[in-house]
Length: 145
Length: 153
Image (cartoon, rainbow over the protein chains, first blue to last red):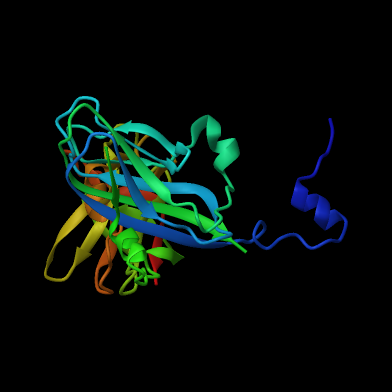
């Protein structure tokens, strides 16, 4: 058996200051909504732009109306270049519902992901028909020093 | 394919200020507990009143002791009620089984999330826990704790 220490714990042991953005970071919440009216099947919805230095806390929620009659209509949450960073494509057909954000295997990359103030959080839609109509809401928890 | 923008993003692109209550809002946690002692089967427990302007962030947790005997069908839901307004006892959590063992439930508005994510409290609306014993009259005994995250400007 071994005893090991995290990055911050190692600093504490060395009597160095641990970043207040990591131990005791303050929480902020980003929230916005979009009203879809016959939205094209493969679309990008820009939701919000977290400020520079904000870091993803691993929590968030996507809620939607019954958006489409298309059997394959999906929503994903991410950033440009990683459209499913926070939530893989999720079925949004036939009924209103919600999904908690979940990076899955990519959580090791995105838990603590630091925004640069120029990277928007986006929704990506996919499906066979351009008929998505209804409200979409997204909330995301971030932390900062 | 199209590219579209949320309400706040549209303001951002127009060089308008996005409400701080939407982008970068502060968070609060509401927490309280209730010690049930032979509480009537179908009861309403008033837990807390979020301040005016607080908005539901979509997260929270209900923790319960084993509230009744295994033969019961005890359950709890989390919702809202206010004077002069129809109560929505399962707005944040549908009735959930509490007769088998102590347990916890993450709040989940399910199909109603589109209504309750971002729901704004008016300072007069209470968050409630509703108990039930489907088809029975058995009472509930044990501790119930509820925590709920909100956001605001």
